[in-house]
Length: 98
Image (cartoon, rainbow, N blue to C red; front, side, top):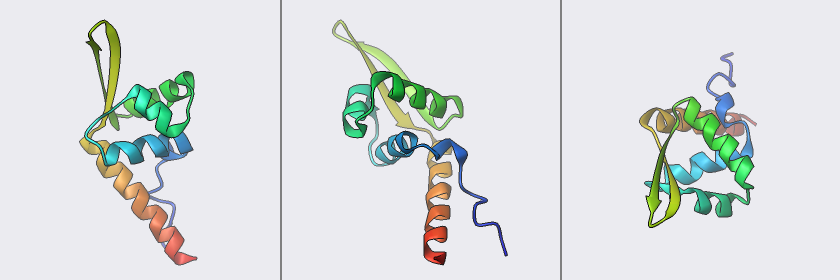
């Protein structure tokens, strides 16, 4: 029997990372405050999880100033999109086997 956990990606293990990717898959980009509000995360918690996803190349971070206020926007990369789709497909296979 084939290993059903083969395409489960450890980068998406945490619910915050799973939420970040889910939101970014259906939006072109999302700013930090919106992500924080949607996920109910703290600044530090969200920052650490976005940094982890950025480090593996799954999301892109764009920092700019809007007026005098800093604004950080996130978007999913092509590799991030591919890996997340594989992860979701693997989860669906597990669910359908039970």
